[in-house]
Length: 151
Image (cartoon, rainbow, N blue to C red; front, top):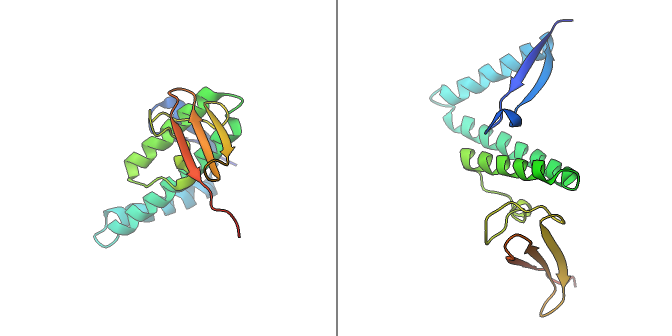
């Protein structure tokens, strides 16, 4: 079975790129899919569908990056920070609004990426109301998220 090397280029540098081997069947389905994608982007009727598709793929990639960040934060925080920066560039490139759970990965004061438990302290406080307090260890910025009590 023949295999070709396929390179997927990252947003910023060669360090963000990935390599994988691809078979003939995978290549034919990939080319067919990309030809359809290019038609949607270039064709007069498919421009909006192409943009929506790009945003959907970008959001899916951001979810994968953030799950990897949480998984490998304790082992290598520098790679985790780098991946958060890559995710931020994807957001800016495709004009995607960051989903709320992922907003907690950025400090509101210094705008730097924070990794839970590594660059920040997370506390549950009861005064004056029940809330989660996130403190950035770089700049000391505090972010509070109030939690509604269950009835």
